[in-house]
Image 1 (cartoon, rainbow, N blue to C red):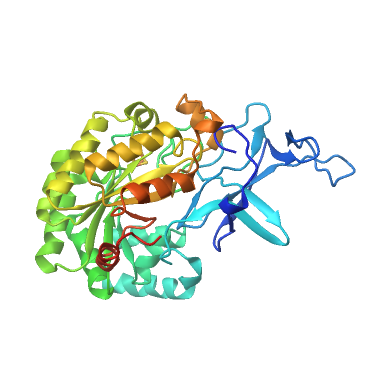
Image 2: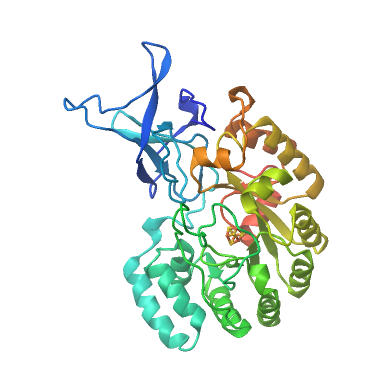
Amino acid sequence: MKGGEYFRLDPACLIKLPPDSELFMLPHRAPVGFDPETGRYEELDHDPGSRKREPCYAVAAFLAPGYTAVYSASYKEKGRPRLLPLFSYAAVAFYRGQFYAGGVRVDRERRQRLEGMDVGLIKKNVRSFRKVFPKNRLVRHLETCALVYGCPAAKNFFLKRYECPLPVSPTCNAMCIGCISYQPGGACPPVTQPRIRFIPDPEEVAEIALFHIRAVKDPVVSFGQGCEGEPLMAGDVLEEAVGLIRRSTAKGVINLNTNASRPDVVRRLFNKGLDSMRVSVNSLREPFYAAYYKPRGYGFKDVVASIKAAKRAGGFVSLNYLVMPGFTDSVEEADALLRFLGRMNIDMIQWRNLNYDPLAYFRKLNVRIERNAMIGMDTLIRKVRDEYPEVMHGYFNPSKQRIRRARTAKKDPL
Ligand code: SF4
């Protein structure tokens, strides 16, 4: 399904369900499938294998990091069900003893693969880091992220590899409908990771960033995490922390994941030594951006101004492009993306799944898209690669070596 339209799954859009993916049952949602005998899409209101006509439900796949959904699971809502929790819901199929999903691999790095994460070693390092950082509140916070919420970025910090998370901000100037760290309550789904409750000192931030940079061969450290609000709200702390890090070392990438709402702060951060910025957007069209982000005190023009400031400073800019099958690959959104790439000199697109109830997303954005206006995520990615071969594609914030490798290749290998 894409935006309420049903499709027969093309084998070319199916991948073997990647390791670390999860299967979800979707309550109050009946599966819809294509019946070759009637030639119609049929809703299953009970389990056809059960004599007692037991109910059955649709199933979706939450794809492992590095994979992007190209179709949502196919279902019909029964009544007015509660919103689905804040995850993504890719189509899943079962064929000859193997699960398949409607998805595409966009990043080959194993950064967040669970099989490389030795839980015993994480626990051991949590204990030893307590001795190394006895007073650092940020390390205590990351312990909870790693051990309670299973955050892969926090686990990687304790494993001394890849990208180190640097959450700083308890507040935000947006009210994204799919924010995983804040929901206003009522009928909204629960948060998956509550926000940090304090603003760390610049010294606490710099201490763990420098520790990670020195311990890892090709490191990245990143502001802007799932367990916080918007890091630009703590701009002074970021500025001082970046200054402290860069006074000690030029090694590694200092990255900012952000809503890019404050161009003046972005400018100051790049002046201090920030290397890259990943800007999250669900759409490159202002009305749909505003419907999802509900920005307060800033607008899409500030996002554009922040990107321009970063590029002027020589920074590396990624789009964290939040993908919803049927919307992202619609003709109009695809055109908006291609125009934006032409205008803004974006370095990379991170094709990330938007964690939101698929049907509710179209209702919230108040948009209906004709099925023949959905060109397909594979076609969209191909168009971008053809028109802008220099743009990198992926899922994770790239390290210096990864950027160097991509720039020496003519076209970024997916
Ligand atoms: S910008 Fe980020 S922190 Fe702020 S509401 Fe949106 S998802 Fe949440």
